[in-house]
Image 1: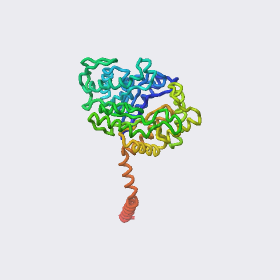
Image 2: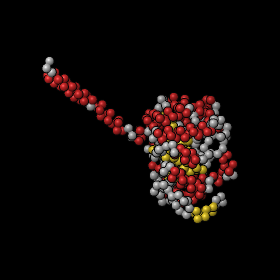
Image 3: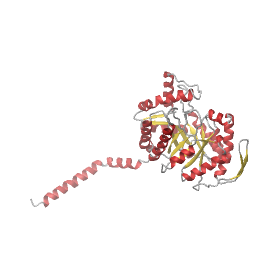
Image 4: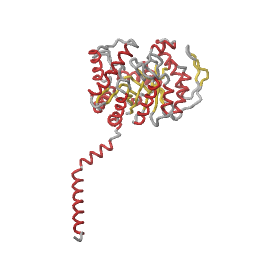
Length: 390
């Protein structure tokens, strides 16, 4: 299994945005040092919480400070961009990162962004489809001509080929509707599924729909089959918040205050969602979200068990993306990533199998080894005594 980090990012308004950008770049450096495979960065233009307006610029800066981690737009909102420009920027980032780039795309989720740009919400899925139908052949080096009501292409071709022979990986994000999964399956690109909404359950016992993961995959599989393609679960990425601490109780306490603040001030007061924010009701909604698997929180052993449960529930996926929110304090987030990399990831990557096996073998034979060592030491003492002139 592969592991990555995903930042929208969502930061409470009022903090210095320059320092927030630098802190997010530092997170990318940390993820690289901790051997995470991927780092995804979102795109937002309004509402004050999303401080990265161009994930491509962020990635260009962060890539120069890292060695091996793969970066991805999480996501580039295709309806906001001319498809030729989207493909060109992807190709250039592919070169600047020397192949460490994934073009993650989606339809957008912030109505105020769409309002400012004059894009009807009802048009975003159609525009995403039309854009992707142009972006993919452009990235393959093909010549594209197309006329739509919002863009035109005439004998268009991008000048930069891909850095590596396999080209640029493209992924499509999917939330609750089957649109993203079907689009990804039709075009043979990677799917990315949100396991649960970032605001958690509206109230205890309702609204997570984690049991629909299998249904999401079937939408992808069916669309791929209709297009004559074979679906590969190794390409499927799942996204949800993960926080590791010393215990489940400690992890939940580190998250709750920040989770509640974001739930009330972003999702209710800014976005207008009908969610419970009262003390008792909100706490129960949070606890239910964790219990149901919409947030993974706990000790390393708790998190390993939860991820294995997610594997069973989804019937298999290739990459888990840890959604990093400003719920816990920054130092707690860094500690969580460190604990995950050292204690959780090895359970799935089997990276510590050799040292564990060696320890088990040595422990199983300790009595024999100690007996042989004692006998050899005693023999050496006797030989030394016999050889001594005194």
